[in-house]
Amino acid sequence: MNNYQSGVVRPSTPLLTGSKFSKKITLFGLMAAIAVGSVLTSCKKESADAAAPGLKLNTEKALAPVAGGPALNLTDATGTVERSSTGNIYTVKNYFVDQGIYSGTANHRPNGTYYFDFSANDNKKGATSTTEPTSKVWDISLSGTGNADIRINTDATEGSAIKFLNQSFATVIGTYTAAGSGATAWAAGSTSATTPFGHNRTVATLDYSADAPAWTIKGWYNYYFANHTLLATDDLTILVEDSNGDVYALHMISTYENATPVGTPPTNYSWLKFEYKKLP
Figure 1: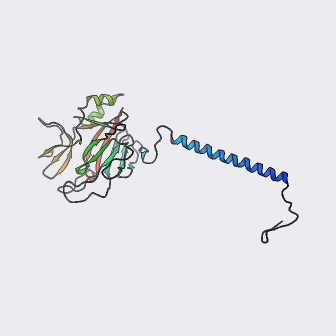
Figure 2 (figure 1 turned 135 degrees about the vertical axis):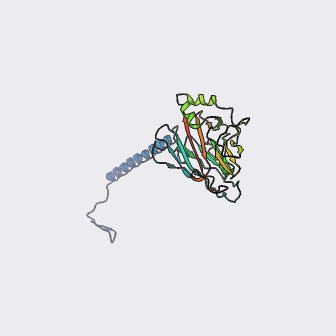
Figure 3 (figure 1 turned 30 degrees about the horizontal axis):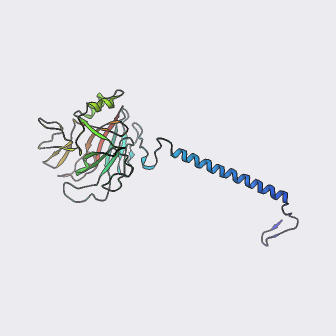
């Protein structure tokens, strides 16, 4: 029996013989080898998983709201994205990126640049308030007054393109629903829209039409001069083609918080609301 206080071993406790000592060493070596093999196997598995095609990590992981279910919070931004109970239409509400430069009292206050990726249903964080994300994986940027000016990704690999149809979002969705409708809609779309695609025309009345006699469509909103308000047009649908060749129908709805301008001129922007659908 050991005397733990004195550290003395009683003579009745024999020391390990050479044979037993050898067996102990052999067993220890075997266990160590098994442990090392297990760690290496685990590391190889993690490496293989990390390299698996289609795996997205961290901010690259797509938001996947359930049809008719609760809205999900956007990444690195205020706002939510939700999915309709039928039709796979996604709606983004109160999309706002607090970049610390939203200041001043004039009608043209800047708020940096927002970046959105349709395949991920999510905001993408810019490297800075005015420079694009380092990952390059995004489809459109939103900047300018009220963050209402749409630009496309011009990267050689991840780049996108934009067109438009002079039809309401509901009409476009109803028309292009069959298989292959994305390519059909893209072919029917107007030639590539000039970017930034934002201001269409200045109006003296509450005119929500993009088109007008002898007027060339240049954007998705009209500027109502009487109270300096952006009016989203109701007869225009934007088409965005991403780097995978997928086509999304996009309807811009508002640049104001809760989609309601407050004040004259309004001061509660840039809280974007829009809806979109990937055309099959």
